[in-house]
Every structure is written in C-alpha cells, then in structure tokens.
Image (cartoon, rainbow, N blue to C red; front, top):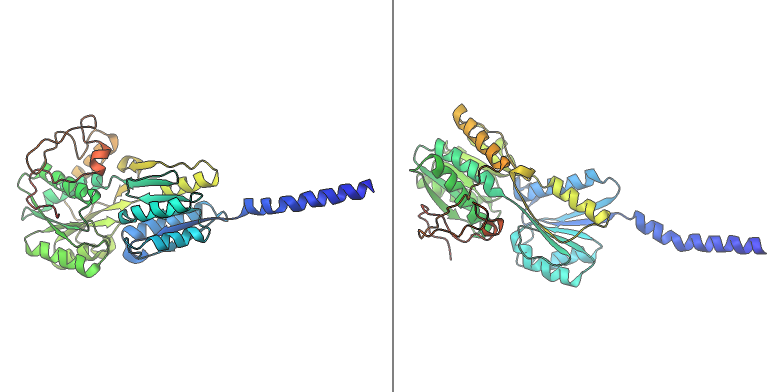
Length: 357
C-alpha cells in the first residue's frame, strides 16, 4: 500500500512538472515589423539579415516572424497582432513606429519591445540606433574630392533628426576637403518609393550634382546616377551590384550582433530597457569597399574611417555653427553630444537649402 502511494505520488509529481518542462523548451517567438519590403536591398533588407542571424545563432530555441511594408501611422494593429499571437520580443524598425510601439507596449507589459531610431522608452521598450552620420562624413569627403561640378546631391526621406544629421555630416565631410562644394537636397516623403527616389536623383543631376547620396531605402538613386554616368553611394547595404562602375562605397548597417545580444538577454532573463547608439567603432556601421576612385582618395577615406573608430575624429567636432551663423552649445567634451546629434533639427552653416517645415 505504501509502495503504491509513493508510485502514485511520483506520477502525480511528474505530471505536475511536465507542463513546466514543456514550457521551458518552448521556442521564443520574435517578431519584426518592417517599413519596406525585405527586397528593398537597403534598410529593411538589412534588418531581415539580422533576423536570420538570430535564427542561426539560436537553432531550435527561437521562432521568428516578419511583417513587411507596414505603414507607420497605422502600425498599432500590426504590432498588436504580433503581441497577441505569443511573440515575446518584438522589433519595430522605423522611426514612425515609436508612438504605436509605446501604445501597444502599455497593453502588453510582459512583452519586450525594441524600437529602432526612437528616443522614447518604457519599462518594456528599449531603443537602438546607429551613428550612420559617421559613415556619411566619410562619404562626404569622398564626394568632395570626386565632384567636378562642386555640387553634390542628397535624396532625403523625411526631415527627422537622423536624416538631418546625415545631411550635415555629409556636407561637413565634403567641405573639409573642398571649400567650394555645395549641397542640394530633394525630399521624397517616403522611406521606400523607387520611382520617386529615382526622380529625386534626376532632379539633383539636372541641377548640376555629379555625386548622389541618399537616405532612402532602394537602389533607385544609385541606378539613376549610373545612367547619367555620375557617382553615387549605397545606403544601408552594399549596393555595388546595382552600379558597379559608378558606386564609390556604401554605408552598411550591421544589426546582427545587436539582435543576437538582445535575444540572448531575453532567453537568459537579463533583458532590460536601455538605449544603444553605436557606430563604426562597434561595427554597427560599416563601410563598403572603396571603389571607382583614385588611390589617394581611397587612402583618405581609410584614414578618416580609422580616425573615427579610434575616437580622434568626430563629424560634429566643436565648434559647430548652424545655418543662422550661431555657435551650437557644445555638450559632448569637444564635440556635440549623442543627445544633440540624435535630436538634431538644424542645418549647419554653408547649406543654402531650407529645412522643410
């Protein structure tokens, strides 16, 4: 009788622990929201490369989902859909997802959210971005040396701080090697719209620009420049394949290490809300091959890249003068602070275009 009781107790104990064991082995469901298609060969494409890196790093332990081409103003519904279907870590990968992410996160406190390029956080919402402006400064120096018309062109998406900082850094880089350079910008009010991006590049070329860069997500501006025999820079990923004889380099976003690190933190229970803002030194921003340029220009670019990585050069070294001729307060130990760069809402001195209202 006693033996039967013990067997029954053991069986009951095993049955009670089985759900816990199964739960411990359940895959972590991770969701991604993309503003463009994964085939944009730029911003969303690189985030999807990071998603795949998570799957490779944690075989059998994670399950990932992505939803592409999600409009920013109406993204609440899509983000909530992931939260309601058991996704415990959700990456929302565009600036305009900030407020929707916060609203959904407030309704799902047990879900961890990561918002790319935002500045508002909560207990279950972290933010992350990269110092893309460091790469744009290098590209600017190359443009300043390669231009023959002394006019360089910039295809912009929206006039948010990230894009404004990129334009300023690109111009300051060019100005540092060519005091006669001028920059022109055309805004397309979209992150991904190949026809509009191509049209914007053609407008800049018609205005005399012979080097084109962009803060939009498709290769269309690169291709438009190549069709006119002009130079261009790739955005977010290596776009050499789209203009092998005309591209100068690409600014590459490498999200893989960050996505792996944050997934590991959820898996081991150490995830906390934080902000991460890294650049060339940490490898979150990388430069593509330096091609289609003279050896001395390539050497200059490599030296500038090394200096930025070493911390001996910063694109926004003080003093920084704004478009109105005023010296910007220097809050970053000889350079603008990360907070100033992340909230940049002015053009630097020398840029003649006006910021859109």
